[in-house]
Length: 126
Image (cartoon, helix red, strand yellow):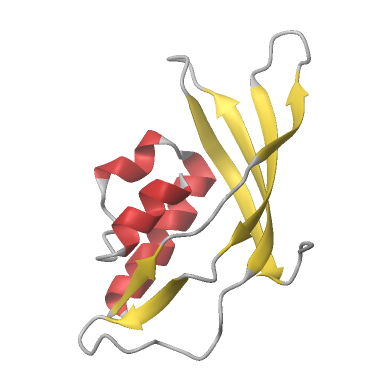
């Protein structure tokens, strides 16, 4: 999901068909709204986030249909820029953030992120 978002964010393409490959529901709406806001404000995002997701829990244990994922994502090299000038949009650095996501098995057997929460920079360990 983050890779799909990072690719779409290079042009703030909130309508990218790739976004729905790994996200649905609230997660997809959040990503689309964020990219639309960037498009509206003339911003693009350069770089890529660094993620190392880990399974925190599965439900039910014997035949999972829901998985909770945690991560300490790093947005240090994933920043917003003004599309017209190429200058940084703000002076807020990226950094390591605690991320939680709920991934559910769809009717077609695929797994998609349904909700996620990204916490503030510095919210996870080094």
